[in-house]
Amino acid sequence: MILFNKNSIIDLVIEMDLFQNIFITDIQKPLVVNSYKGRVYHVTDRYCYALSFCISGRITYTMAGQKYVSDPQNAILLPQGGTYSLYGDKEGAFPVINFSCQNFECNQILVLPLQNSQTYIRDFETLKSLFLHDGNRLKIFSLFYEMLDKLEKDQHPFQNHLNPAIAYLEMHISDPALSNTLLADMLGISEVYLRKLFLAQYNTTPRQYLLNLRIQKARQLLSDTMLTVTDISEKCGFSSVYHFCRTFKGRTGVTPTEYASQNRTFRI
Image (cartoon, rainbow, N blue to C red; front, side, top):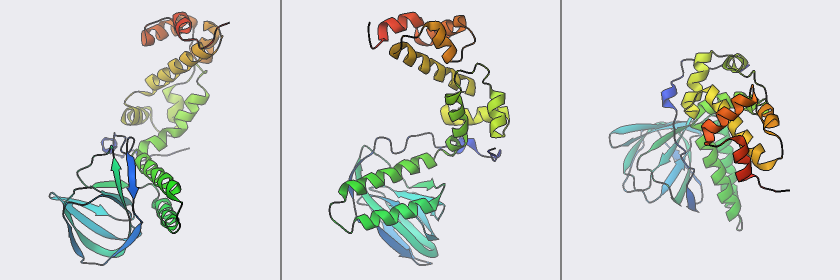
């Protein structure tokens, strides 16, 4: 059973694909900045982006009157062209990766909460070791993209909570008895909270999410197989062929038979 903190502030979920379109053009040799307590540093028009982690200690950045805290639970993204100052609250070590990129615009400091900070520190050490030898450019870029991918996923904390429910829906899509009650009981939460999680992460209800899955599955079967409409209706968990045909046409604008005729990928 998976338990959730029901006081979670769903409105704080970052509803954006932070690094989806980013194109990395350069990654500089990673370095560790040792910051002492009371350290003050000013940066004007930063020359590139930087991703900073924290092994120990704490730094407070100030930009345009806003404060941003770097500690072991949060990574910091420093923007190219940014002007800011920092203050060392506690002595510590801060791994930094400077990089250049395209298709990414950010003009403020971002605080990126981490689900497991140690995985990033290990990745950082691996990245640093790759710079010791020539010929590792592809490995360096690949690992950095993986780090960005993990960071993006960490900004959607409710997605991980819903993963067991999503996996269950996909595995049991043919079961017409699937319900919010079943999913909520499986996750150990209320149906009201289940609905809030789906709305926060997917901007839709659990029922509509399942219906979308079933329609997607039906379209795939209609295109790639010679199964009958009745068989497809059963495999996609619809209670009757009538309900399937009515729902399918409502979602796609055509009947299942018409869709198969227009999209089937092979002919006999």
